Length: 190
Image 1 (tube, rainbow, N blue to C red):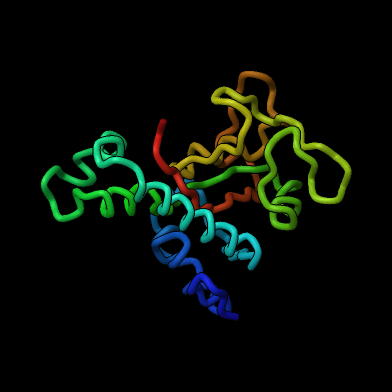
Image 2: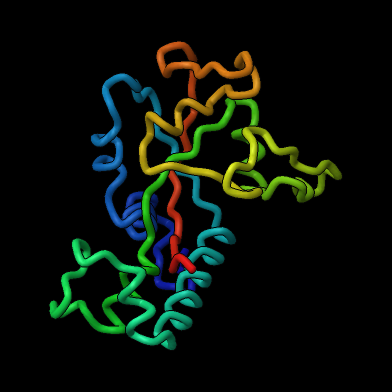
């Protein structure tokens, strides 16, 4: 199935590489040996892939209309050195709208809902269930969907609601953990 955004959705590996900017095997190789990978199941919904790519293009268009100075403040010189070929509105915009790989830890029992309905903001209705999603792990940085570039950190939230208040479960304590590998768009910090 080809979509208008140029991603071949009939090939899971191609889609993963396009959306995550690296092959699944490379992502798995970066996960600590403390987390044993038993199964990898790519889950790409055509509607969410199209929405992601459309949003990425929208962010890029917006960034291309942003002054160079504002973009330059948002990108570290360690990532794009001043005076380099990429040190332009186009290069900085491309860096700011580039997808990043993060991990989302969630209890096993909610994975099916995430796959079916996508990520839902706390307080919003979950699909056609008539139920609103409650805040599960707090909202330190505001209500949202939290993920981490560190799979070990994300794994601490796998069974958060069954943990005694104030304690964190270690990965080895949770049988059958599920980590979701996510493609995220960071955009520009305001």
